[in-house]
Length: 272
Ligand code: KIV
Image 1 (cartoon, rainbow, N blue to C red):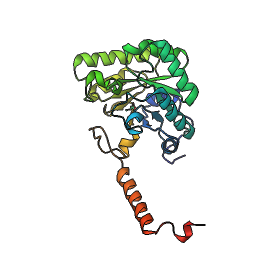
Image 2 (cartoon, protein in one colour):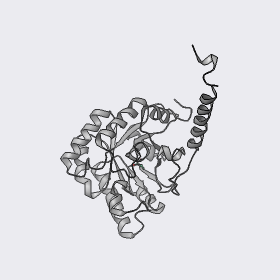
Image 3 (cartoon, helix red, strand yellow):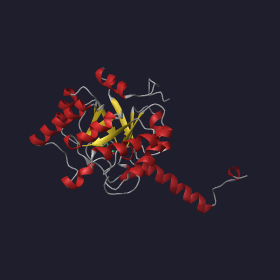
Image 4 (tube, rainbow, N blue to C red):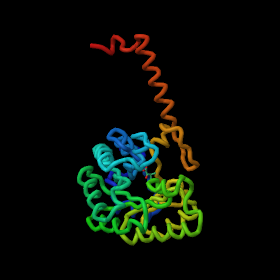
């Protein structure tokens, strides 16, 4: 356990609610494999999201739409094996829950049975409420996701800030309440005005986690590849890059290539 984390007990949805109640901010990051999931967990992150951003950063797709249920299950399983403390949330991929609530439940049950994750995240409000309720009724905790919803990129046509207009802001607030009333344990708000996010967080009793939603919410989430500087071509205003892993890796790999070419590697000590 890292020195940064004071509490080694497993994070549960109940403990997240207690964190909100006592004003302790919640940290959340993505991970898509065993090794990175383990590193993120040991660093003391509260929630690990096996996001469908795996479609972009792991599979090289332009959007999150192509990733399949089987692929999300593969990534989810790998992460769960590396995590001891954090709550692991797996994103339900595009097409696995929008059809009807029966299909949504079947997809949700597959993810839970095959990955052993703790809970699921779905994008949307009123439109998917029936599916949300059906999944919740099977005892599967759900995290909602409002504001910018990357799975709906083809409807909106861009990744710009959402809910700037009053009508969209009112719908978002309504959706947030509907998700809370249905029984979701938390909501992610992506790329919306900070003032609106603050209002949602103060009206809801469940934790509200922001990404590009300002600081007056109950926690923050970032895509790990972005905050570590593994990706370079994505620089929204909300992104803080904590290091430049791309250049660190590049330097190490170039060094290795040089050593192989020159015959410096392996040395006598590095052989049998
Ligand atoms: O898939 C993802 O990484 C996400 C975050 C942006 C919240 O949904």
